[in-house]
Structures are given as C-alpha cells and as structure tokens.
Length: 511
Image (cartoon, rainbow, N blue to C red; front, side, top):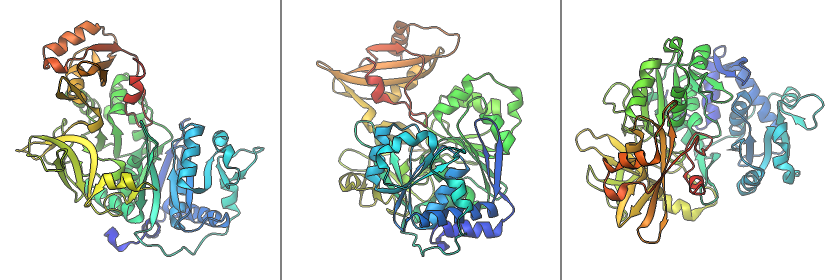
C-alpha cells in the first residue's frame, strides 16, 4: 500500500488499526524496568480520546501544541492525537532549561502544553495556556491527562486534512544562535514512513526499538513512522542505557534499532556479557562515524549488522545510507537512497568532481521529501533551500569508483591554519587510531599569527595512559605540519547534546 493514497498521518494510523486491531503496536519499558503495551485498537481509542480532550480545550486545526514529555506511550499518543485533529506538534527536550522553554513556547505560538508535574516550573510564565499533566499523582493540582481522557467522549469525527497541512515543528539545537524550527507536513511523515520502511526491509513481523529522545527526528523518522507504515510494532525505552540496550532489545523482541556513534561507543565501554550475542536484532542503523575497530567489535560481540547513514532533521528520510545487502563500507555514509539526489558543491554552488570535497546538497520538494521551511525564518529558509536543493552545511566527498559518500566534517568545523583548510574530522580520525584513545574532539580558536590554533580533547580507554606530548608526536608522524594540534587535553567526558553529539562550542570555553 502506497502512502500517496493517504492524505494524513491519522488516516494511515486508523487504516493500520483497522487491519491489525489486536496486534501489539507499542511496548514501553520505563526506568524501573516495567513493561506495558497497547495493541493497535487500544492505541486508536486513546488517540481519539485525547483528540476530544484537545478540542474541548479550544485547540483547532493549525494550532500549536507543545509536548514536553520523556519517551513513552503518553508521548506517542499525544503526537498522533495532536496530528489527528489537524493541530501541530511542538516536541521539546525535557533537559531544556526554563529560559530555553520560554523561547520555544513563545516562538512557536503554542496554545496548549502537555507535560509532567515535575517540569511545571518551566511554564510558570504561561499560566494563561491550558496545561495537561501526564502521570499526575493523587493530590497534585492540575488537569490529569488520563482523567481528562477517561471522561471524554470518544471522538469519531476528524477535520478533513490535506497532505500539505503542517504537522509538527521540530526545533534543531542552536549553538551560537537560537534554535530553528523545522516545519513538517503530513506528507513529510508519510514520505519517511514509506521510504524508510522500504529501505530497511521492514515487514509486519518487525519491531523497531526507540531509545533516543523522541522529540528528535531520529525515532520519529526512522523507526516509528516506518513501523506504522509496515504494520509492525514499536518498542520504546524511557531512556537510553548502555548496559541494558541489548538486553532491552531481547526483552521486548526488537528487530531494528537506531543509534548515534556516541551510544555505540558507550555500549562498547561496558563490560561485555556473552549472552548478549544471542539477541533479536537483525539491524542497527547509526549516524556519525565510529572507528573500524569499534565497528568490528560491536558487530562481532552482538552478532548484529551496523549500517551507517546520513540524515538530518531537515532531510526527513535519509538521503544516504549503506546498503543492507550490497556494497557496505563502515567508514562511509553510504549511497543515495529513498529517492533523493545528492550533489557535492563548492562555495560558488558549483558541483565538484568525484573525489573532491564539497558541501552535501539534497534535491527534494519542500513539504514533501524535505522540510517545508524554518518556522518564521524566511532568511534562513532561503539560505537552506535554493531551487529545491537543501544545503546541509556538511562536507563530504564521493568515491569515483564505488559511488559511496564519505563524511568529512561540518562546514562550520572546518578550520584554517597558515592559509590551509583542515577538517577537524581528519585530525580526530588520526588521534582515534592511537591504541590508548577512546574518543577525541578537535576544535580551533583564533590565532593572531596563524589564523587559527588547533586544540584536541581526548578521552582515554580504561586502564590506559598516554601523555599530551605522546599524542602530538603521534600526529607529527601522520599529519602535515599545519594539521598538528598545538595543544592536547585529556578529559573524562565531553559536553553532549541529548542524542550524544559533542558540543564543540562548549569545549571552546574550557580553554
């Protein structure tokens, strides 16, 4: 069944609920290890109940509803209920500060907030907005999501929606500026559901495992929507646990997972349990590179294939991914996928030759195969989307023989010393090859003589030692002189985003 025949996410959902009423749709494991589940029919009823509650609170088609919840069934019900009545979901990071949340509520023009009681302080300046509390305990004030749903009339009428109607605004983390709101349509969600299900060979017998924060596009794009499209099921963990990841997959019968490089490295750092090799996972897709040795260690220990991909909130589905059955290179971000065209361009916007480095640009249709726009930000939208080409800000090169793409670095992480361009990722790759190094992060700072000075931060493997001078000597033997770090710092951990990305802007304040 092709999603083109559906006009909305809710239409797809209710169709699948009709096909699979008694089949498990969601399994959820909380931090205490308790598992609860909902079949398709039960999930549909709860979506319709919450849809009725939202309407009774004055939410109309096009209104924004801010969702500030951890991973779980309530998040998923809220997501689909919001979309079912034609409203727009604004999911936010539960780790966001009060100041960050106040910006997101105001900028998104949210008309209602769904959150938990423990986060109430973040919303004190928005007492004029209705608040619904998930998991509200007896004696706590406020509207309980569960009680409101129990007392609601089951919604059996839904507004007519178009695939072009807005469905969500996903805010990307800002480094030196405010977060940008990526606007998604119903067609965007339908597109990623269809294309990712096809690319991952999902069938109704699969169960995808979501452990990364669900406010992020990863779990929504690559796991939840494809599972729904395939009539499969979804396993959700309240939070990622390096020790329990494989065990959670086994407990909940998950077959496909999605991670970033940081969680993979965290799993490898934990004591290995040989029983974890016998698990239900047939595939884990991941973003951001790991070393060859880490790739070999993971696939050997856990008997599970890994496939690196490239995607971002703005691309919706993945424009690049390694083949499941064909050519696969663990150091590559893969080949063109999901119907996308990818070209690498220089600073003039001209396509570079194969083998040369250039910015990744992805051809797509705004609001269909790529994001519609940045919310209330025409200037940044115009920069990002030019003649239907999405400019990603990432640098890569394409192998002229295999056609595989290789990530070089974020454009903003490219450094310049003595007139020469340097990719932080290249220096990190050399440092990571040292037997004592677990992970590294390379940054630059302004230099009055040489334009920029290069600084390397390093986390060591357990039970290993190395000096800063030894790392510099290691680099001297393997890198051109202008690429060698001027300083090396050995640290215990890096500042990271909620999905494990290293926050290099924060590292610069450590010097």
